[in-house]
Each structure stands twice: as structure tokens, then as C-alpha cells.
Amino acid sequence: MLATNGGDMMMDTKMARREALATGLAAAAFSGAAQSQERKPMYGLIGQMLAAPGKRDDLLAILAEGTDGMPGCLSYVIAKDPTKADALWITEVWTGKDAHAASLKLPAVQAAIAKARPIIAGFPQHFETEPVIGQGLKL
Image (cartoon, rainbow, N blue to C red; front, side, top):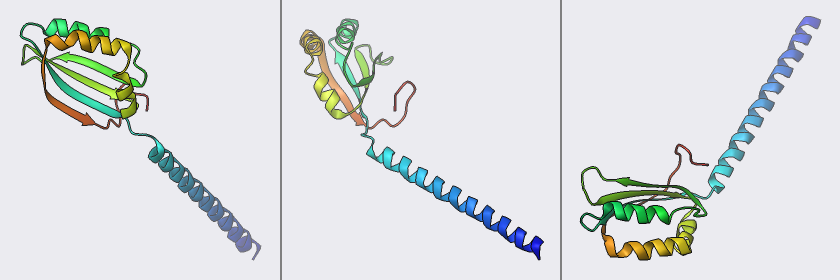
């Protein structure tokens, strides 16, 4: 009888531990889900910019000048389009849409826009995105 009773107590203890563990895991999962839902989504842009004929490298240099130290900018990549001699692709990731909007008011960015405007031939493609993960991004 004692062995059975002791065995029952061990079973009860194991069950209690399992229930406590399951409850703790569920609470942690719920907490993590709540935190991830509270996280403000990042804001991304991918756009193609066309330079006036023969001016792509000049445009690239101007854009590179105005992109240092932009608060909220997690990634800003300027790439040459290998199929179009006058096209650039700009890929941006920001902490939020408001950070991107604020960057357009920075003196260095305003100066770069003013300097580049005469050699910009157009913006044929533009996509807004919501980045979720990426190499080098602090999530």
C-alpha cells in the first residue's frame, strides 16, 4: 500500500511539474506574441531612378553624399541596374514611415535632392514594403 501511495504522490508531483511547465511556456509564448504585435513595423522602399543619358555615375555620387547619418535608416543601398545603362535601384529600410519622411527634411538630403534634380530623368518603378527580417537589420 505504501508503494502505491508513494507512487501516486510521485505521479501527482510529475503532473504538477508538467502543468506548471506548460503554463509557463504558454505565458512566455503569449508574452512574446504580445511584444511582437506591439513592435512597430519597419518601412521599406525599393525604387528605380533614371539618370539623364550618360549621367548615372554622377547621380550615384550625389546620392551617396546625402545618405550619411540619417536617423532611423537601417539600410540604404544604391545599385546599378546591369540591364539599363542609366538606371539605379535604391533599396531602403527604415525604423518606420515617419523616420523616412523626417529624413527628407534633413539639410544634407535636401542639398542632395537639389543637386541631383537636373540629372534625374524619372522614377519608373516604386514599391513600398514592410521588411520583416534581413541580414544586418536590428529587429
